[in-house]
Amino acid sequence: MPSDTARRPYVAGNWKLWGTRAQAAAYCERLLTLLPEPARRDADVAVCVPFTALETVAGALAGSGVAVAAQNMHQADNGAFTGEVSAPMLLELDVDAVVLGHSERRQLFGETDRALSEKVPAALAAGLQPILCVGETESERDAGDMQRKLRHQVQEGLEDVADDRLADVVIAYEPIWAIGTGKVATPDQAQEAISFVRALVGDRSTAAADAVRVLYGGSVKPDNAAEILAQPDVDGALVGGASLDPESFAAIVGAA
Image: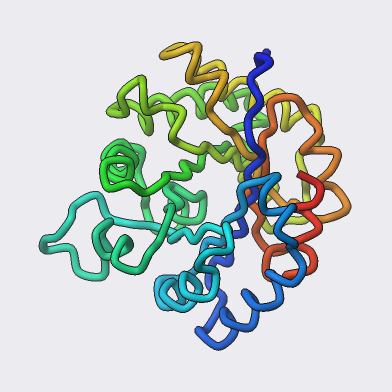
């Protein structure tokens, strides 16, 4: 059960493979007109954009309170890792956060829990806020393996994070069966999984479990956001397709 500690809502929009620099600039201009300053004071808001648009977005959102996140990074600062991007490279672009272990990175590009156990502390050490994604497939849920899968992902991803830094990690629970499928976890399913994730953090530190923010990600839209976000352990949302429309994304922020 969550404590009385108030956890600030967090809503991040993951653009995935979308957004030329021109599209990104127009998006940011529109988003800021839809999110008045009081809304930005009441919740943490971020956009997770492709590498090529990071500098444009960071410039467009400078001073607005809307954070900028990359969608991946390598754990090393430099080296023979062709095609990768490091934390110092992101910091040079005024990036605030980084998504790590998104289900599409895991499923399509071979991202491993072992790599994430290095990436998460590397992001923290560099001053980037990690958004660690975890979640089960439909077959794993049907087989009753949801908790086993989440336990492995959370424990390994946070293995080398010091107890006093655990609350600095944002965790996003993504039921893989609900990403881009139109299926959505019921509020009860989201609450069940996210409270379990919080309990896993609590195995390391009760204080961190009370403070860590756990988001829901899986076909979040304006018409279902309020009900999901009202659950006691759900601290916000990692929004996919709906975040590509500034109006929809702003409405989800409003629900938080």
